Every structure is written in C-alpha cells, then in structure tokens.
Image (cartoon, rainbow, N blue to C red):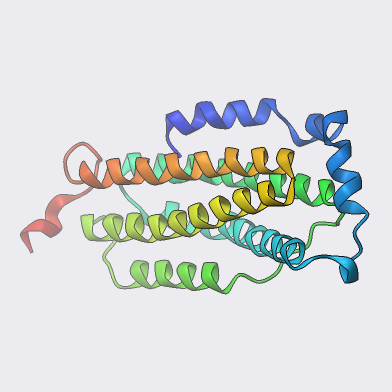
Amino acid sequence: MAKASNSKKNTSKKKTPSKQNSSSDFEPEESKIGATSPENETGLQKLFADSIKDIYWAENHLVKSLPKLINASSGTKLQGALSDHLEVTEIHVSRLEQVFEMLGKKPQAKKCDAMEGLSKEAEGIIETTDNGTEARDQGIIMAAQKTEHYEIATYGGLAQLAKTLGYTDIACILENTLAEEKEADQLLTTIAENSGTNNGVDTASKNL
C-alpha cells in the first residue's frame, strides 16, 4: 500500500505473469497438476483449487470495493495507501490467473462469504461515521486491516499447502503476495498510530 509497497509493486510488474508462464521452469508443475482431472483430484488438491477460486473472487471484489474506501476517507496518507493497494490488488488478481494457468484450469471465482461480509462491515462504518472525521478514517483503517488479516491467513495457508503438494513455483508466487499483504497491514498500523497528527485527518471529533 505504501511507497514501500510501491517498490514491491514495481518489482512485481517487472516479473509479469506472461514472462513467468513462458518459462520452462513451470512445465513440470503444469504437467503434474493439469493432467489431474477433477474426479481424480486428491482431497488436498481439491482444497487447494477451491481455495484459489475463493481468494480469486475476494481479490476481484476488493478491486470494486476499495474505491469506496478511498472516496470515503479524508486522511491524505490513508487515501494514498488505499490507492496504492488498489493497484497492487489488481496485480494479485493477475497472479492468481497465472496460478490457474499453471494448474491447467481456467480462472474461476467462487463466492467468498468472508470477504463479502468484511466489505459490508466497511460500508456500515462509512454509513455510521461523519465525513472528514478521525472516527471515519480510523474505522476505515480497522475495516481494511480486517481484510488484510483475512488475506494474510489465506495466502499463508495456500503457500504452505502448495509446498505440501509440491507446487514449488506456485508457492513462490503466493508468498510474494503474502509479503505484500503483510506490508500493507503494517502500513495501516503506522497510519493509525499517527492519525490526528501528521496524517491530515480532521481531529475535531476528539473534542465532541
């Protein structure tokens, strides 16, 4: 989300999915995974595939919901961080599409009830707080961090499961995203800690 994430983001852009997909390093995984038909998948393989579909839906949903948080926030640092993370989230979507290709599957989304619930909670915070107040921005930070924590748990679990299944290259991709989600969460903590001072948030609500 931050400038620090931007550098990571730029690094991610250099390692584009198309370049990675063309690498012969991925061929062993593609043949091993892609050759498995749904009816012959093991329990772990099915769990992994279903979880990828779930987080794919979640990331696409975030691409649509993050602009609402950006427009509702007033702190300049918070707006900038959310805007940066929107761009990073689009890269995460592309990475997941790359994972689908490596699995020999077409990108498919499976509704993520958890992410839908987190988004509705964020909307509720916006509806119950006043624009331009510290309460609004702190609420948005809390909502955004809940989302980050869900993603951290998901990508962490998926990366480990990929290693268990022998999907080494896929695990690396997921770990890249995991690292960026952790950075985003830390940045939100930093912004929250400095809220009302140098974050550009209206502190008038403190006197209410």
